[in-house]
Length: 130
Figure 1 (cartoon, helix red, strand yellow):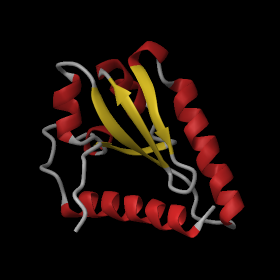
Figure 2: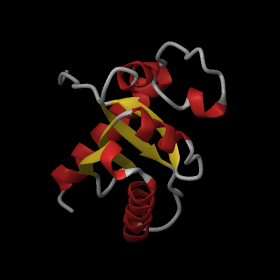
Figure 3: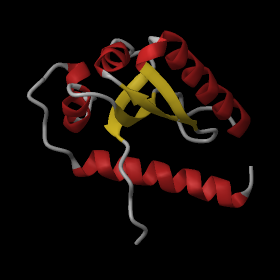
């Protein structure tokens, strides 16, 4: 992987983590699964589909190749467990543990039922460069 691709991947991850740390408004759902889902995602899928970023649970250990393989396995696991007509793949990331998906309410419930592999579901927002 080139330096530019690695920097871009790290920038995406940094932006996502900054958004999580800065905190979106707390959801009325206080269950562990509910706290992992951006409230805006829940609102949007209630009326249709939403484009989301799914943050995956991937171990930090290992070298770069092992980490990339772990990310790929986690992505495969999520995609295999999603109900096909309710979710579509937008993008797979090779170096960051994310999936970009377009989902509806049924797919969101499926993602919430995957705490072993899904860390969080956030709205995919355009971010202006600084």
